[in-house]
Image (cartoon, rainbow, N blue to C red; front, side, top):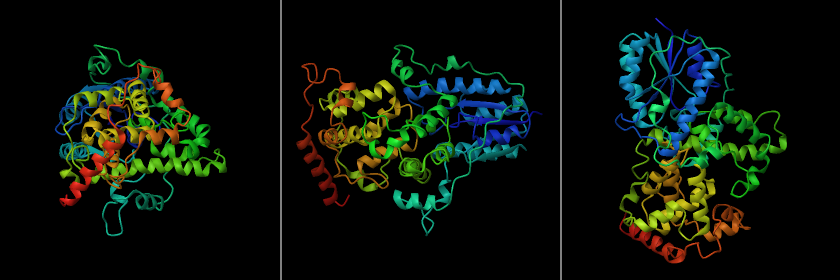
Length: 454
């Protein structure tokens, strides 16, 4: 019998990986990754995420090999593949870090039960959130629906634990047969649209840790004052690293609060870590509301009269050709880099939902396919926040006027010119919608829902 099987999921790192640390201490380790996009409820990852996963798995496999272990890849239903691997390796235990989506939790619960019935030790660990969703609740034991009291309650629980160091060596068990990563065809095949992703990113734990260090000792000083200005490099860009678990929230927390960070940075660090808190809040919502990507968190929005999406308008939004410069700049940044500045996410989402009266789920699906950082919690929660249908949501009548947003946050037009080289020429299209008239239509639709009791 070999030692434990370590099942990697959304934790593609060696440092501060609680399940891996436990596995290394327990014997010869069988590291595995299962690409499961067929189980009931599984949310198959989008194209941009597939690109990231390919390269992050390459990096993880190399790091494991340097320490003496081989990463085994399998594709299929986890409920089938994990027991199959246990049989092939005669593993003594199966260890993993927890997931929080409903379908994922169902799979994990079934596996725990069936494997324990077979006499195996099965253990899950906390590694992806600072506080487990069931530990941060209101005084009467209910989940928080508003962010600020949630974050105050989270902070009141005390400083998060310090990160675990990566194991220097790993006693790797004899590896079973593995899929070839290239056979998964995660990279673009017919047309190579990933030039911008390659230009913008280097997936993997080493690059993630360097990015974190560069931010806290560099751009963190700009964060509070300039985080809403897309032309200024003042944000961390750590969202895909957290989404894939190349860094943990514990590492981020302690890096931002490290003694080497000057005391004058305290306000910047607090503002930055509040965004880590928003991520925690969204995962708490997902845990208690697993249909977050498909159902309105606020049922009153079920009666909202969304208009059938017009193909021309939807494609103009997707391609960054709406004739509204700030919206188009954001959508082009997304297509090229696989991410979008947070302020621009709010602006582009508001335009689709409220100026084009398009159901937020259509936008959420597009972001799911084009963002490298889209996950089951943040992507739908943030779309619902803009729509007004989510937890602690912006009121529906709060409509981001992209022209006013540009005057406030991109006054010199640098961001817009960066992504729209034809701006100011005859090649740039006329606006596809009148901002003022469409705003009024959205408000009228919302008032109709309120009057109907929805």
